[in-house]
Length: 173
Image (cartoon, rainbow, N blue to C red; front, side, top):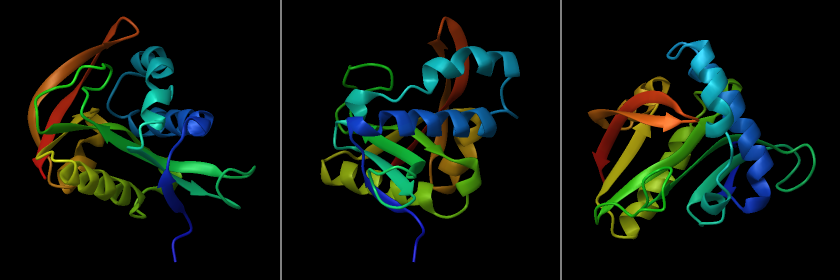
């Protein structure tokens, strides 16, 4: 039996998701980006997107006494949308995007991220999408590659006025 529960997120999860994003990105990306760059961009990248939390397409894995009570903590999260990350612009028909995936470093290798990814893939497929893209930080490439994603290009986003590079990855649904 799992020691975590996976559920749809809501705007009320914003603080827990933001705290998770900080724990995850600060640790898991440390070997891939200069510390001064992470110090400058993480305050922008680790704010939960309330619109995404309210979309019905974002999920959170929780541990503790039960969902919505003190002592409960988010240990993984992620979702999907038709919009490019960081915009409200819809992209090409049939292409969906993974959004704000993170796992607490202490909770890696338990299948939680894979469970969230599987749910996103299933829902995107059922909604008529045929391709799933991930705008992946370098530290996330192995996770996505293990799930069948391939690097199709590189990209640099401007975050807090600074360039932040990563890989564009995709897979068929």
